[in-house]
Amino acid sequence: MKKDIVTMKLRFVFAVCALVGAGLFSAASSSAQEGAFVERTATATATVKSIDKATREVALVTKDGREVTIVAGPDARNFDQIEAGDTLTIAYYGGIVASLAADGAEPIGEQADLTTARAAAGEKPGGAIASEFADTVTFDSFDAASSSVRFTPSDGVQRTVTVQDDKMRAFVQSLKAGDKVDVVMVEVLGIVVDGPQ
Image 1 (cartoon, rainbow, N blue to C red):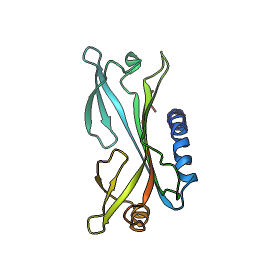
Image 2: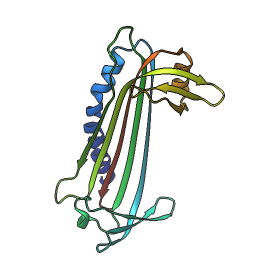
Image 3: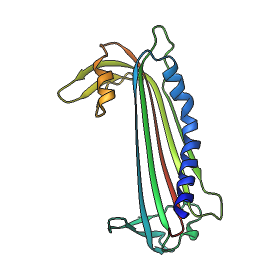
Image 4: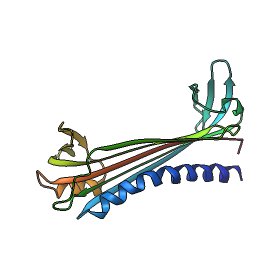
């Protein structure tokens, strides 16, 4: 039952944060002639072994038995609600869509946003942070041997990144120098502390 509550809390946090980026994803994909969408998720849990209220240090034990100590910053609301035996769940979501901009379409222009959410006063600590970035970039080149792509965003500073996903790699290989590509990235990190499971 407890595990279900934690899962529901994380899903709610992600749903709220994902809605913020939904407009950016739909804007990029609606004008797309072709493109690729990649997303990644990860979840980890640990059990609270002990808490030092004075130093705000929390000793955790991971599922594989490793011990890790973290320090909760002053912005961590409801710190005093944490107890030994509580379960801490961390979840990550990352998504990126890259699509060939439609001929004559207005560039997205660089957009960046940061959204946060946290537990209400009196609840166990929890929250999420979501970052979004969108821009229309110019494709410069792709090196198949190193899987690295060079592109120039709207700020004019050329960048190089390594492409690891097969779908994104196939999309990049289809581009030619000078192509305009709409890129939207969303990352969400959520943390929930709940009682023992």
